[in-house]
Image 1 (cartoon, rainbow, N blue to C red):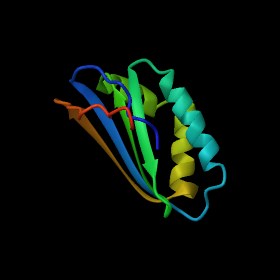
Image 2: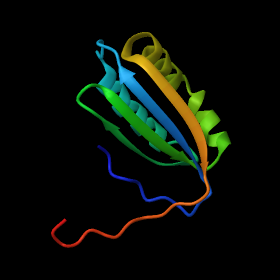
Image 3: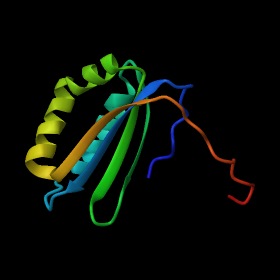
Image 4: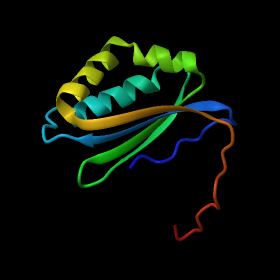
Length: 114
């Protein structure tokens, strides 16, 4: 699991990608790492958090300054290739949602013992 990113005061956008892996995950981890690194270089990218369970169900939430930044990311050539491989090889199914974050709250800070 990736740690929660430090985000600006809302509003901003969240792209919520939930997926169930297929049985064929050859090259998936490498591509996910590459996409994470590439996304972090994009204008308007604010951060991401992700988790995947032992049965291959995962959720990744990436945060963006605005919808223009999301559209630019969606259309990048390397990301288009990853999307194609996801549809044809890596995912049994997926759902993508785009939401505007209006409010955000944080809980108490952990104590010294964690």
